[in-house]
Amino acid sequence: MMKKLRVTVDGKVYEVTVEILDEGVESGALPVAAHLAPAPVAAPVAPPAPALPATAPAAVAGAIKSPLAGKVMSVEVKPGQEVKEGQQVMTLEAMKMNTYVYAPKAGRVSTVQIKPGDAVEEGAVLMVIA
Image 1 (cartoon, helix red, strand yellow):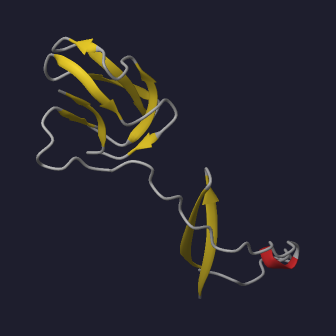
Image 2 (cartoon, helix red, strand yellow):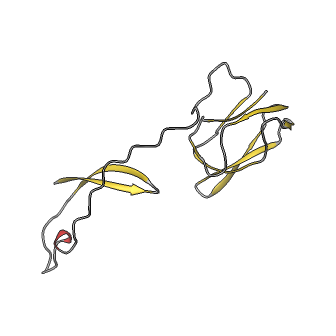
Image 3 (tube, one colour):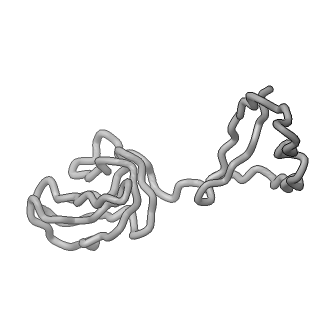
């Protein structure tokens, strides 16, 4: 028997289909559903609209893209700040490991499109160096 369930993890709502393999009662034990109250069903939650573009247009030179999906832990630069090639500009965390993001070229930071605590996808534009 297949059963459709809604699961919320870290504020994200997922709809999953679960296959129930055995609904029989073993040696006098009650089936799970017999001793649990039904959970209230909440209205579907619409995902929040992204505040910033997820990818850089091909024409944007100097765009620094996220090397992986993760959480922004820190941003070490601000718009207008001069950076050197290879200078650390931010830190991402994924799977409890920090990944440092470095400036690919020297220049001035024109935009910073993320802030600490933001979740980013792989390939998302983090900032632009002009």
